Image 1 (spheres, rainbow, N blue to C red):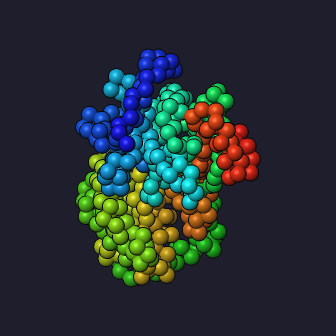
Image 2: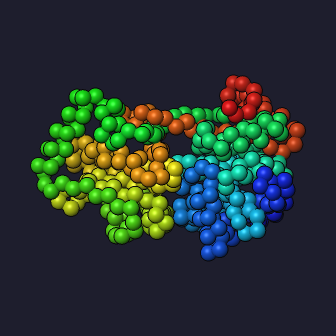
Image 3: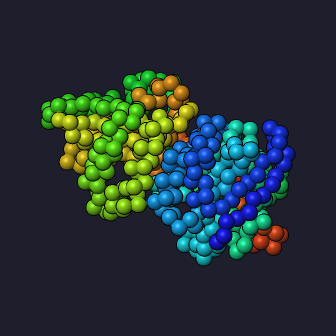
Length: 383
């Protein structure tokens, strides 16, 4: 597919004109674009580290070397106002239904675009207009893993309603979120029973009898390469390694992880947490910080010490991050009903997958039919 043309759009809420550029992502992998991209991340109305330059570009380089993914950049006079990766897909959840979708991969846990504050609805208007004009064989558009409580979601809902455009939430669920004004100790006391807290203290004492026990917390880039290799080795030593689903099981995901860790650390977007026994890591956690929130990205623990629950002890230490300046909440990035983190974190974040009508009237009528088959009801928009 050739590079896609630029679309002009006027009437932005902040005045002036902006355009939506959609094309081969490799054309925006430049120093100037990365600088503009990083500036957008700072001004975005909602954080999404998985779409920041230091994460999305390594993802694309590792997983889409031939440039099948298109980058949609909403911009004005060199300033980026919004960005989302798009890909034309012939298969929709196992069914032969061609569609455009916001591109997410297995190690990307939030799909909503980065949009500068005040430009949310203008971004969606531009993107939906482009999808209408470039539907080709696509029957609809699909937006996976969007938060349902924030300006990006509300702007999409408002724009869909303003246009009378059919849309449907085809899947939604909740995952653990940490959002509290309590101290780490007070939150733990409120979340866990007295018996469970007593058991954690016992396990911590017993683990300390195995050797010199220490907790390491790092926010800078010092020794980031060594820490990254320790994490890859620790994760691969457990069940994920045996199942070939560890990051180190694929050269592509290992490279992505190394580049993302280095990029996040260099920009001050990473907290690293480790429990060490005689200097050797037995539990590790990488968390992306993106004020006002943070995102628990990857965790690993040594199964040889499973009887001490090192992963649970690590999460106890991780509670302290919510007290840091600028961090109001932490998204667990975990699956719904996670057997461990759901016992710790009592708040929930709702995540939804939306499908949206695009193109002309015939295509939209077909979408309404398909949506009714999928959800059992007419596509009446998103809440």
